[in-house]
Length: 464
Image (cartoon, rainbow, N blue to C red; front, top):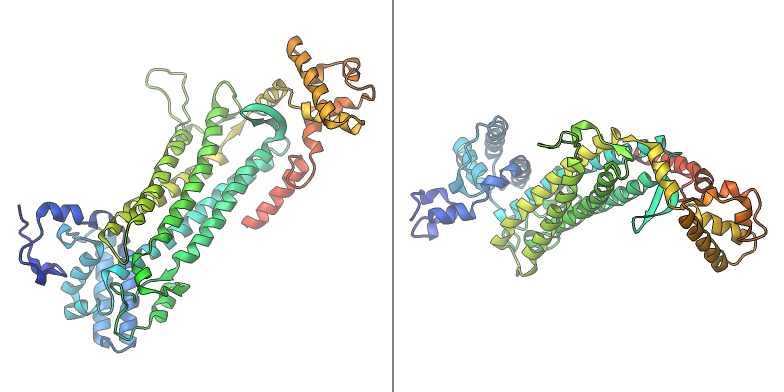
C-alpha cells in the first residue's frame, strides 16, 4: 500500500516516481524521538543563518525573516502547538517546513551550505553537551551528599568485608568516601568526553565539505564549540563521542549498582545497618511487614539497561563504511535513554543518601562477630619480634580456639594471649578494640577517623 503523501513535501522527492510506502514511512521516520533536538536544531540553524548572511550568501532580509520565523517555531514548540508530521521524517525537515511556511523563500535558503548529515551531527553534540553539564551537576550533588554523610559517621565503626566475609573494622565514613572517589573519577571521565563532544561538524555538508565560502569558526564561536571537525568524512559519520559518553555513563551506573547492592544488603534484617527514607521504598501487596528498597534495586537493574545501550552503539558502528549511513538514525534512542536514566538515577540517589539513617550499634555488633581485629593482633606480635608468617599462624590458631569456645579475640585472657608470644603485654587490649584498630590506620588513604575528616575537608574544597 502506498502513501498519499504529496512528494513535493519531501526534500529529495523530485528524483522519485512514486511516494514512499506507508510502512516504510513509519519504519524510517525518527521524528517521534528526535523532536527533543528541536531547541538545539533551532539554535544551530540560527547560527548558520547568521554566518551565511555575514558571508553574503543570503541577504539581510532573508536573515531577518529566518530569525522571525524561527522565533515563532520555537514558541509553538514550547507551547505544544507545533504540528509534528510523520511524513516529514525528522525534526530537521519538520522545523524547516514550518519555517518555510512562515518565512517563504528565506526558509528555503537556510539549508544552503549544509546537509542533514552535518546538521544532525551538530544537533546531537549540542544536546549531549547540555546533558553532560546537567549530569555533572547531579553527580556533584551525590558526591556532596556522600561527603556529608561520611563526615557525620567518621567515628562509626562497621565491618569491612572481603569475599563478603568480615575482614577488618573500618569507619563507615571511610567506606562512603570510597564511592566519592569512584564518582570523582566518573566526573573526570565526563569532563574529558565533553571536550571531544564539543567539536563542530557543521560545514562538512553531506560528506565532502561545500563550495560555499562558509566561516565555520564563526559558527563554532557562536555555539560555544571549542574546535571544528578537521575531516568532513569523519565529521558526519563519527559517533565516537556518543559511544564514549555511554561508556562513561555505564561506569557511573556500575558504581551506582555496587552502592545499590550494599544498600539492599545493609537494609535487610540480616544486617540491619541502615534505614532508607520511606519515600524511596514500597511495601508488599500481601505482607504488611515488608519495606522494600525499590529504588536501589531498580537502579541495580537499570545499570544493565545502560550497559546494553553502550553495546548497541558499538555494534551499530562496527560495520559501517564511510561516510554517513541510515544506520546512524539508531544512535539517538539509546543515547537519549542513557542520559535520561543516568540523570534520574543520580538525582534520586543524592536525595536518598542525604536522608539515609544509620544504626551504628548494629554495625558495631556485626564488626565484633568476625574476629575483625585478627590482623591487628598479628601486627602487634610482629612489633614484638615475631616474623609475620609466624604471627599470622599463631593468630589463626587463636581464632580457631575462639570459634570453638564461642568467643571473640577480645575476650581472650591475657594469659591465653601470652601463650601466643611471651612478650604480649596488657596494652594488647587496645589493639583488640575496634576503635583502636581503626584509629591505628592513620596514614593517607587509611580508615582512621582523623584521615576521614581530612579527606572530607579536601573534598568539600574540591566540590565548592
